[in-house]
Structures are given as structure tokens and as C-alpha cells.
Image 1 (cartoon, rainbow, N blue to C red):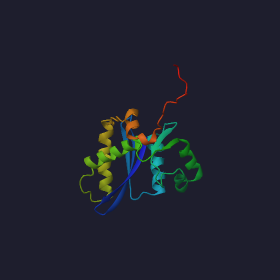
Image 2 (image 1 turned 45 degrees about the horizontal axis):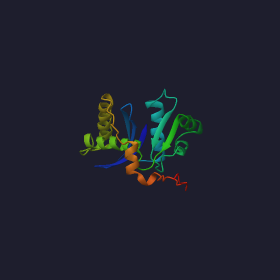
Image 3 (image 1 turned 120 degrees about the horizontal axis):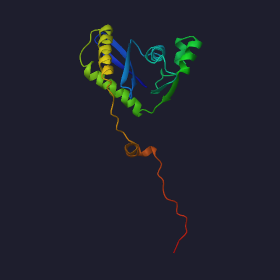
Image 4 (image 1 turned 30 degrees about the vertical axis):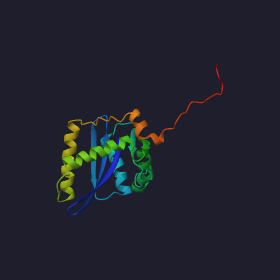
Length: 175
């Protein structure tokens, strides 16, 4: 499950979109909020755990390292017992800026932008309705991302992150 947010300017203000995307299942869920606060994030996580995946024993959550994307945010929004319950259902992994799972969520946000948000929407209720219709259609089709970034590609593109291994010369000669 990749988790990402996006801030959107509307005619009468801004809105925040929390994108939760399950790449292998072809499922996504978008929550529209007025702001992007720690409490908004906590409620999105509660929705993920209790509404989207209520029967899951553990949810692997890959997300960026944004200041509001901290498990401590759950303690700001909920009583300690509730925050702890939610945290125990999560296995959180933070990725570098160009992590592939986040790129998948960003790809979904790009598709949402082109297919749904490419016009003016008058207010947040209309935005929420349009996003929900887009989400339903994409989920029914189980649209997946054909991610083709391989280890070999990574070794080329991220060359600076991989060590250079040079052969060790033992100094012996077989001649």
C-alpha cells in the first residue's frame, strides 16, 4: 500500500488528496480533505485500517517521510489505546524521494489529474463526488501499473548508490 498526498487548488480555495494505492490489487482510495495536517493524516490511516482493510492482520504501508506522516500523529488525533491499536496493524516503510512505490502512487495521482481533475470544479463537495466516481471506475477495472523498473535499471540510474567492487590482486603470480 503506497500512501501519498497532493494539494489541489480549486476555484474557491485548496483541497488535499490522500492517495492510498495497492499496486498488485489494482485498488486505490482517495480521501479529500480541506487541509494536510497530522490529524487529517491520522484519520486517513484510521480509514485505511478500519474501512479499506478491516480484516487485515498487518498492512504494509510505504510512504514518503513528510512531516505529518508520522505515527505520532495518531496520538494527536486519538486516545492512546486507539492510536496503539492502529499502529499495531501497520508495518510502515519510509522511502527515499524517488522510491518506486511512491512513484506508483504519484502515477495514480497523475492519472487522476488527467482523467478527472483536468477541469475547474466549483467546490469541495463536487471535487469529492468526482474523485469518488473516478476511484470507483478505476477499482472496478482493477487498473494496475505495469512497473518495469528492474534491478539492472536501478544499477544504471542509481549508480551513485551502488558500491564499485574491484577485484583484489593477491600479488601472487602463477608463472
